[in-house]
Length: 186
Image (cartoon, rainbow, N blue to C red; front, side, top):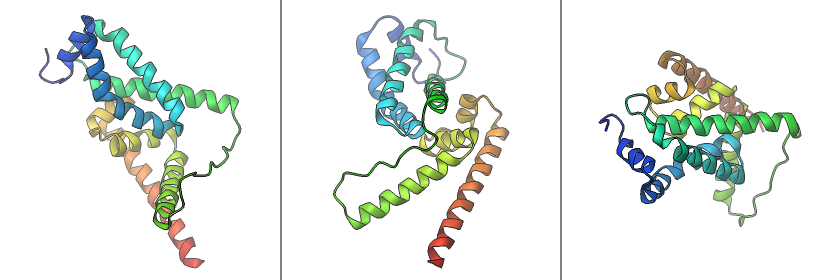
């Protein structure tokens, strides 16, 4: 097995039909897959569907996995991202141009309200980024992938990824600088 991929032995066991290995892989990878899908889609139910499809594909492709190429974790993120992209494309084709705001049903607490508002502003600002910039920001800052791994997932060079990150960060800074100025003016 490959020393470069810590999941190579687990995949070999999955390919051999080891149910315990499949459960172990899902348990280990599910939180990150769900987090990425939730951030990309903004819908917990759709994120669960994407996670389920991601792990079905892992199970189906385990026998064909060959160590030495991209790491399994990189492949898993790529599959998740592609499934999210497919869903987002379908949404654009079939849904309303503006999604309605959904009220938070949690008990109102000043700090929780401020945190929720800040989170919504951040999510909205990230969602407003161009697709590739948003994907780069999510992979590096929310999924904790290295620049090299994120570049592999996005199928771009590390330099192109860093450019996407720089443009995305610049846009986010400008968005929040403008919002801070508006709040100061009020």
